[in-house]
Image (cartoon, rainbow, N blue to C red; front, side):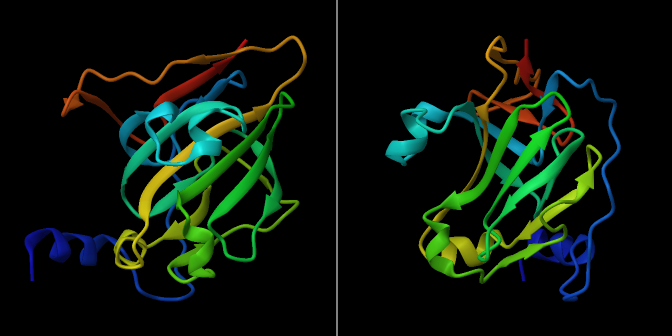
Length: 185
């Protein structure tokens, strides 16, 4: 067994009823925060025509380190999927956010995904939303990149990229849960 597998085994549970603890970070209503730790990727670099052409909206991709997605701001869960690979959120300022786990993962039919919230729930920033198994995603032949997209804002609102880090890995910023990603202005 590899050392990383041993470490993952001590911080992740295989229990069906397991829900990770909430993450705690300071928030502002005009900011969307990282819902997972990992390396930032520009949407244009993703291997998905719809996402990379920004037809769904503006945002980032994140190569995840971890196995759970957390609420990126105070919001309401407005859309869930039967396969638990994506979630739609409505912020307190009226912006709509789509968080999608993996590329092509809808074909996994929910295997490797667990949802901790339901449609209509009001959640605080840092609330666990969805768990996922990166190994299962890779074994099924898909990429595990997480996309965080602001799909709709108020008419007078703009989306600005704020994802940044003093830590670079392979020239990409490393962000942690709760780091600012997008500013709504």
